[in-house]
Amino acid sequence: MSAASSHLLICSCEKTMPLDAQAIGRGCAGRITQANQLCGLELERFKQALVDGAPITVACTQEAPLFREVAENFPQAQLTFVNIRETGGWSNDAAAAGPKAAALIAAADEDMPPISLVTLESNGVALIYGRDEIAIEAAQRLADRLDITVLLTRPGDVTPRRINEFPVVKGTIRNARGHLGRFELDIDDYALPLPSSRAKLVFGPARDGATSSCELILDLSGGVPMFPAHDLRPGYLRADPRDRAAVERAVADAGGLVGTFDKPRYIHFEESLCAHSRSGITGCTRCLDLCPTGAITPNGDSVVIDANVCAGCGSCASVCPTGAASYSLPSADALMRRLRALLQTYRKAGGSNAVVLFHDGEHGDDMIDALARFGAGLPANVLPLRVNEVTQLGAENIAAVFAYGGAGVAVLARARPRHDILGLCVSSRPTIRTNSASSSMQRPLASRRKSRPALFHAARNVACLRPHSVNSTSLPPSPSMWCRWLPAHRSAA
Image (tube, rainbow, N blue to C red):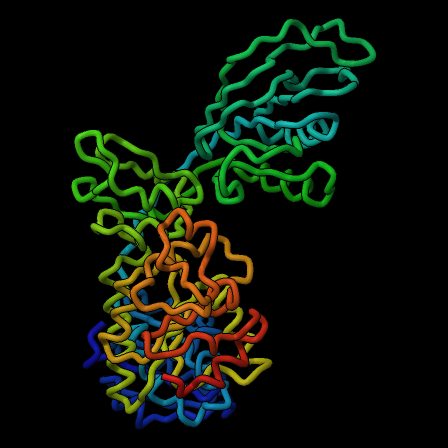
C-alpha cells in the first residue's frame, strides 16, 4: 500500500479512548480523518473515503464486517483494518499510546505475501478402532455419511448385529502412518467374524502382518495414541470411550471429514542447504529432535518435511543453523518488514523503550482483549505483534528487535502450550538469562530436553527474552501474574 496516497480513518470509539492525532501523523503518512463513531453516526466519512478511491486503513477491527459490507459496491477498494483500541487505547497508559498507535498502523500496512496451501482430500473411507459396542454404536451413527469399517482390538463379548451394514473385524494396530486422505496401517491378530456367531461374535483364525488403508481414523480404543502430538494429526480423531461427551464430539467431527480441505504449507525447505548428513555421517538433527508431529524424517544427506502432517509449530525453522527450513506464515523477510515498520514508526512518532510482545492469534488476541476490557491494558511501550505460532520465532527475530531500536522482547504463550516451546528456548539462547543457579542453556541439547530453563518453568505465559544486562529473575512467578508484570516493567528496559 502506498503510504503517501493512503487514507487513514481513526476513531475514539465513542470517546472511550484518547487519540493522539499528532503522534499518529508523525509516524504515518497520508491523509488522516478522525471520528468518534465511525461505524454509526459518522459512517458517511468511510463512504466518502471509498468514493475518493485511495487505499483505506481503518483503525478498527470490531466493525470490519460492517465496513466490508458497505464497501461491497466498490470492488476495487483496498481495505486494511488494525486494532488500536484493545492493544493501546483501552489502557491506563492510553494518554501516552499515540506512538504505539502509529506503529501498529504502520505495521498493519505492510503487505504480507499470499499463503501457499496443501490440499487434503477425503472420500469418507473411515476406520473406527475400539474394543466393544461403543465403537459399533459410533459406526451405526456414521454409516450414512462414511464408508465404515470397525476394527475391535482384544474384544470382549460383543453381541452380533442383526444386519451387517458395515464390516466388523478383529485386530490390533501395530503401526500407523499418514494423514487425512491417506492412512496406512499394520495390523496384528487380524481375524474375520464367523457368520454363525450367535450370542457373541466369534472370530476365525487370526494372523499377524495384515495391512490396510483408510482416509480417516476414529480411535475409541482408550489405548495409547497412534501418533505423536495426536491432536494435531489431520484426520485422526481420538476420544476416551469412558467420556461420552468426548465420544460425541469425535463422532460429530468425523462426520464432517468428507471433501477437500486446505491447510497452509507452513515450512519452505531448501534441501541443498540442509546439514543433516554428509558421506553417511550424521551431523545436525535439531529439527528431527524437536518436531512434535513426526513430520520430519531423514532422507539421505538431507531430511524431508511432510507438509501434509506438519502442524506449523515452526520449531524446525527457529533452530535450523543453515536456513534450510524457513517459516512461511509469514515468510521471514515479511515478518522482518513488519517488525521494522513497527519499531521505526514507533520511534519516529516519539516513542521510546519499546518492548515487542510476540503472540499468536488464537490465544494471544484473547488475552490482550481480556486485559484491555477487565484490567489495566497494555503499557504504552509494549507493542503487540501477532505471529502464527510463537514457536516459529528464531534468534534472528529476537536480534532484529534490538537492531531496529527495541529495548526488550516478551513472548506470550499458553499456560499449556499447544506446541513445545523448547525450540524457542534453544533458538533464543544468545540473549536469554534464566533464574536458575546453573543455566541449563549451557548444557547439550539432550539434557535441555529433560531440564528446561527455569525461566520457562516459572513464567509459562510470559517468557521475557532480554539482553544480558537485565536480570530475568524479575519475571512473574506464575502465569496468572503476567498482566501485573507488564505494567510494572514498562520502563525496565
